Image 1 (tube, rainbow, N blue to C red):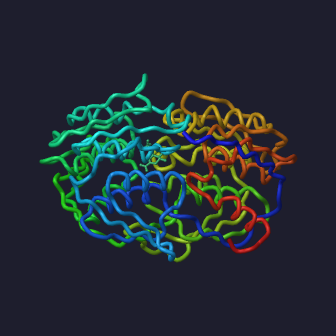
Image 2: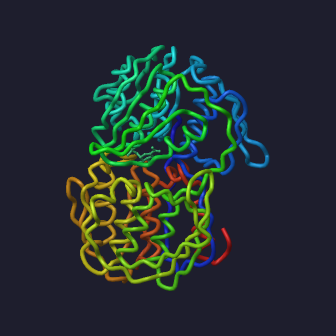
Image 3: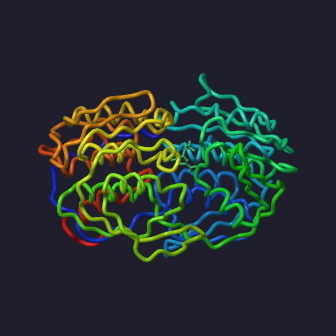
Length: 445
Ligand code: S3P
């Protein structure tokens, strides 16, 4: 594992955010675009790919299993795939860095190919549960030897042919759903995933876009997704829309810093991802959609966000799957709202890049925000719009979203907030601090 030297950052409070910022490509869609292109026969082009460390880990892994992947000087990525069933045995372990999505989805791909792959990752990823993916892949016939607790490092011995299964997701997880569907690509017959609670549907959309036979029915027990295996994927030209999970930081920043007025361009608005926008609007945020359009089969718009006083809410539990990555920054918005916000029903936050409930509770408490920790969320009493005290050193816990969320909180604090390590931000949003500087000095980012 490469040695990671912490990069601390002192954030002095700044004034209003103004101007326009374009968010980078969607992380979830970028991973899938690389994986499916690498399994198509022929050359695919990908525009707008997120060039963050997590996605680069996926690219490196697909190369190690035989795909040719190149970035042109025009920032267009060209991928020559090996065909479903054609993945090669990687010569060395697949180094997944911080990326849970790379790990879980690639475990699915390896599971139904006649190859063996070892997965390793950083300290954060090595603490995350993989049993949720191992269980269905084992039912399909793959043999997985994991470290104690079903964790990394682990080795997947794929099987060909694998056995098609009908699997009901025990946790609402797009990663588990996608791992099973990707394993189903090289499995004879029909692989089914039943999701009682809908999660992001990028895999379904993109599998169809690449020509796979995939149907979705809505039944009493949930969404039933059926994929016909031994699929032949046709190369595509893909434009990746901007990541709503990256836009989230600017939506909250402009909402809490008085005088702010910004446009966040190129925001993906797939309904399985827009829970934060709904929650912020319930709190009184002023977010207007401009120029709604479709990019790469996904709804996209530019969002104009102006400062607005926020009011505390009880966050509806059913929003959780569509804003699961946005809770840390929602907690920040709540810290500036008038009243006590209750955000519960999000157990999964405990097993993300960090335990996001514990990490945010510790960070906000250190910044002088009144909050209470629950097993499945937090209650936060906001300032009613005033600056928070700040003046604390925050542990980002190898978690990009903790670092960025506290950077947003620090914009409206009475004393500087220090983040102990902003290195992890490069996993999903390498240009974050450049854009922050641009928005707080009114220059285009
Ligand atoms: C992702 C799914 C979510 C999300 C993660 C990306 C994906 O995880 O938190 O950042 O691309 O499928 P879970 O599926 O585990 O909830």
